[in-house]
Amino acid sequence: MNKILQKTLLISVSIVSMSVVFAGNPDRQGEAGAYELLINPWAKGASLYSLNVSRVSGVEATFVNPSGISRINKQELLIGHTRWLVPSGITVNAFGYAAKVGKNGAFGLSLMSLSLGDIKVTTTAAPEGTGATYKPSFFNLGLGYSHNFDEKVSVGILVRGVSESISNLNAFGFCIDGGVQYYSGEKKEFKLGIALRNIGSPMKFSGEGLSTQLKSPEGNALTYDVRLSGFELPSLLHLGLSYDFHFSDLVVLTPMANFTANSFGQDLIGLGGELSVWGKFNLRASYAVELGTTSVDAKNAYKGLGFGAGMHLAMDKKENYFFNLDYAYRPTDPFQGTHNIGIGLNF
Image 1 (cartoon, rainbow, N blue to C red):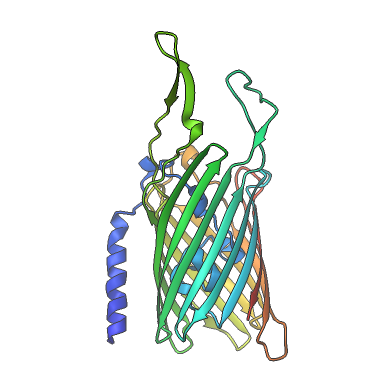
Image 2 (image 1 turned 90 degrees about the vertical axis):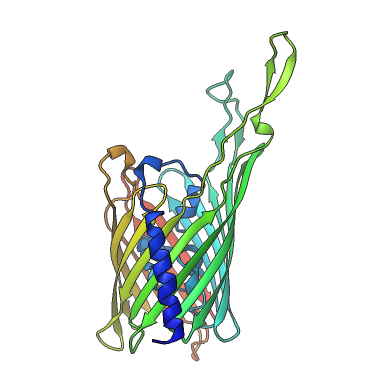
């Protein structure tokens, strides 16, 4: 057993041993904040309920497992748009770029913003609204690096800044994602992925919005500041496996499985698959369930089979440039599902 594999196994065992800490805890459900960090803005991963931790690559790896950033040819540019929980009016827009650095390394950049639309301004004097509106701003920026060892093992780390704000209130924090991918087999058909996400310090809101004018017992007008408690980030652990079945040079079927340990919610287990035809067209389907959920109020909104499709087409005869188009749909209860679309370029 070579040194690289030994180190990888050591890292894997260390991460798996942490699963006790990150085991699902229903008693802490809803106690974390910045849950937009759990919304997958990329169509491929969304159609698979983020089960692709073992084989994700390029820009999409900045969300699920940063070790996959380096598994690209040269450069990748990706734009994503999500209509989340239709007809809630919530949309997610994302932009990502990944590029090789040297022979075995690559860096990745991802930006994601969540739009909640216009919200009415209400006060105690005007509970139905003052006629004014405001727009909350939810934004995060991630920068990661990944390195390949002998094309079998890749290790990656990503640092993300998280911002949430309105006109007179804001919160900002940092978190770190880390992961490992291991490929094995003659055609690298067996894949293993492990990733830790959203490990960071607590966030806390501050600003003028926490100030209020009240009268003292003597009748004097005084300004009081409301003190808020901080909140943790929704950290989690992914363990994923996949295997490529090559029925011919044109058809490849990839089943995959993933276990997710949530530190602020129920654990998840999911199964999915991807069918690739001619290396140009892809069909995807997946199903994920929460473990140990008994209360109706604690259940996830996503129900049923998620699915998606995509195409990967060469834009020149030498196949140096590729155009990617992907779509994903996940059913929900209630609401009318979540739609993702992604457009990208590989060059």
